[in-house]
Image 1 (spheres, rainbow, N blue to C red):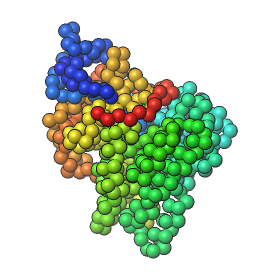
Image 2 (image 1 turned 90 degrees about the horizontal axis):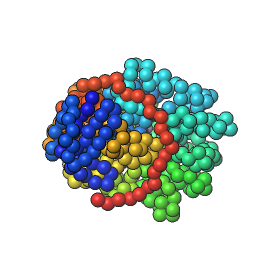
Image 3 (image 1 turned 120 degrees about the vertical axis):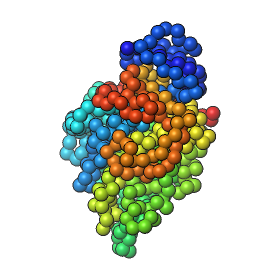
Image 4 (image 1 turned 30 degrees about the horizontal axis):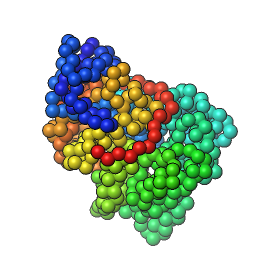
Length: 465
Ligand code: MN
């Protein structure tokens, strides 16, 4: 089966060029100014943008949290991803206490196909929640299994490592040619602030941001980067939310450290006033770190535009409204996380590229090319090139949609972006050569495969278009 996409504005991380693309089977066979060869299917992309399939390297599908489980499992979550232009997800396989990394990985492999086949390609990072000599020895086994990057936490009792353990993890990963992402928040002070809020009788959602201030995120970023400097290791700060934390990253880079920075759409579009909504409505915005200020949103957009931020991923971790009721009497029991897997690309294109905040090339870097390089997928994914997987997203800059969870593929019954009017949205998506989304509608499910990843091949670089 051959498909020819003609006259599109083909986007890479460094430019936009009008080209034809010929797909043969699952791969891109040819890219040229004008391709005369015949094809079984010809698509005219005149006036449209043609992007490499977008990658979401921060998702939590089927995750059990606080006595409940995310509303999207792997079958619905990867279908929602694909519908929204994301052709590959990297979730967090997790070694819980008492488990080996191999047991954690086997659990995630089983979970990924338990509810039916995936609809987007997928992989896992491995979250390390317990560190000792045998876990250290398993790092190389994970890499051999195609799990080439890791995740650690500085908060959450079930997950967090101490500073000495973080140092040892970073040293080992440096030696292995890998790196880890890290959730940066100061666990001890947050616990004390939570106790203060509870003692004062503040049990509603507004106590959530009050107990997780930006200073305690920035402190943890600073500490992580000091440890990484001592270990002489690159490291990724995931879900960066605010100016103070960004300043820590900038300072470490100015001193010569290799630091990667991720942010998420919720920190670009939502702010902490959402927690002040009447009644229990603020609960639907609970995530950690919490939403910050409008000023932080503008600082983050600028950091994306200038390349200070390497990736924009979702931290998709969704719950139905009724599930939030677990925390009606106690804000710390509200299951935390926000949906985003189906909306990210449309939001960033419409509000970022469409409104002139960032260029199409920048959108390509932060959602496709950079994650592909960081996570060992390049040039198979993250770029439109001859020989690459034919994961292709066509965005029509004139196409409009209203965000509505009712129309969605996801199993989540709510979105913080409900009712937003977007212009410049996903029209077609190819997953390895198969047209899976047409006219914005998912038409082909179940083609997703596990992808073994190579080691990272990335150097932080800052751009301005
Ligand atoms: Mn997360």
